[in-house]
Image 1 (spheres, rainbow, N blue to C red):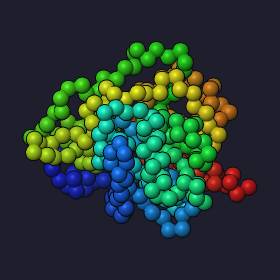
Image 2 (cartoon, one colour):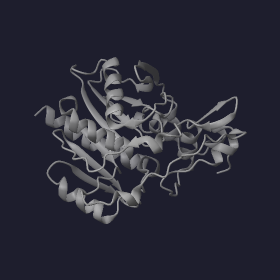
Image 3 (cartoon, rainbow, N blue to C red):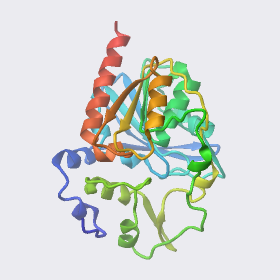
Image 4 (tube, rainbow, N blue to C red):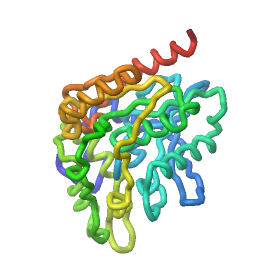
Length: 304
């Protein structure tokens, strides 16, 4: 794809379903929290009695879900937040899962879906899957289902020294023009993405401009200050689903074997063989179809 400063021009060859999805109107909201502003968006569904919260990965943002959200079953309204330090949410001194959870539950309260008749489901990709799993484990009474998408759950014997974050520790880098920074956009871990129109769309919403030029939206110190869930024990009381990318660089065979054994009684496991780590970008339609099948199955369990 030839990169220009025009998103509409660059994605003109995207499929119709993609254009239809990103054109759906979204309600943009924010919440003033003691630790900073939280941004989020909502796809309202008339008469929906269930809500899904879509949680993005490290350094990402709520717009990653724009092509996905409208394809989710109409029985669900959809909330997509910007986690603290990412997207349009404020930056903080440091980041941890307790603070992420507090932020998302605050959004749920603002939307008045906690302690209501609404059933709440969490779907997260990568870091977002870990956040979803953590919240479903720590606040089990709040949630009716959880989906973790290519979020590695490593065995207790895993050597975390070989998986230390190598995120930005430098000063913020500025680019002089929009085309230059868009051309620098990369997925982490590195992988090919045949759906370049999807990649171009999320790149558009990953940047901001100020007096010094163009920069990435996420907090540069996010990677260095994020306290990850090393050896955390996920415990699911609600239905749970793990979706793996068959070509994911983060899910080596030993990790998948551990997940299958450790969660054989508490979590369904599905593999989309043609996807790498970024499953929503690689196989969006297959991913949504799979999620919808499980959501409908879970809803049927409630009414039995």
